[in-house]
Length: 144
Image 1 (cartoon, rainbow, N blue to C red):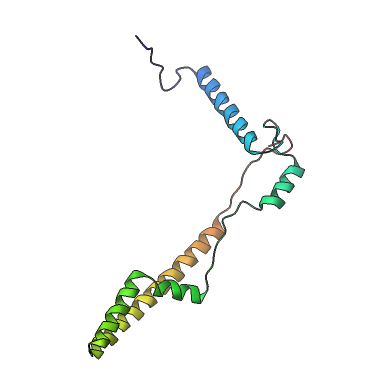
Image 2 (tube, rainbow, N blue to C red; image 1 turned 60 degrees about the vertical axis):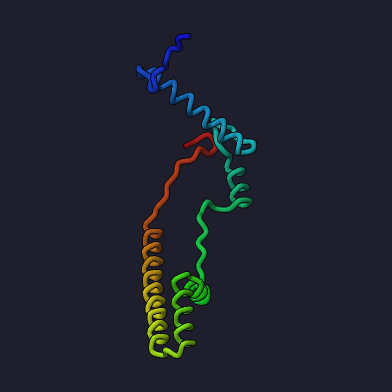
């Protein structure tokens, strides 16, 4: 058996255009499969878009902001903090007061550095989100 191997890419411009058109039709047919009563050549109508917006909501990523209590709980339950607190408790149990206070001061330093880094990261994300401008083209009522 001799199989003729097709090239990975098309050799002529016309074949390339046909492949692009086929992929566009496949995409539009799959898109219409997920959108009820949508004609892939004209897109959603304005009424359908408003209904979907009311039903599903905006296409946004929800940002969960935890308060001070949530941040403190997250810090206390981190593995490094638990190890430091356990080491401080063991030092205190063995009556090595200086060592236990030193380990507790390291835990507080860890908390301070972590809180500072978290605040800076949150500020950087806020700046990036404020500069992010998303523009999309949609097919609405048969017009782009």
